[in-house]
Image (cartoon, rainbow, N blue to C red; front, top):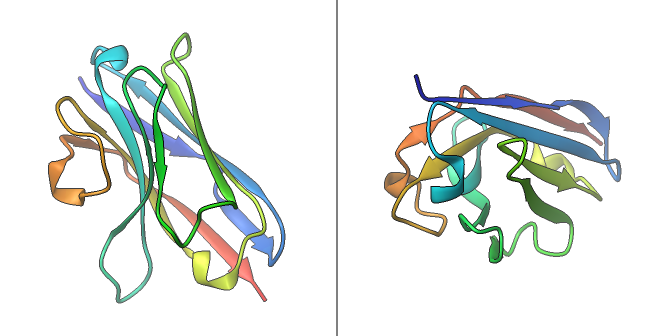
Length: 123
């Protein structure tokens, strides 16, 4: 059974940091790109960052560039999203997703999704 399980969300003050984790199982992790997405209340789900299957390429949305860092530990089948200098507008449910054939931030191109973890940034 394919599973993606996010963790690490929580409540943090503006300017603070959180590290999200995405633990994958049930598929060949090394063959999949992993993306992080977020959805705020009343808004569409948007791409935040992604990492290629090899871990050699990363991509960030402009809104998080310079503040967020994506990384992977293939030995642990886990992808991380380090979020620094958090802003209230980063408040959302954060999801990770896996794609066998696509590398990018198009939500429709991902095959498997986790259940999400809530991130709340207070001002």
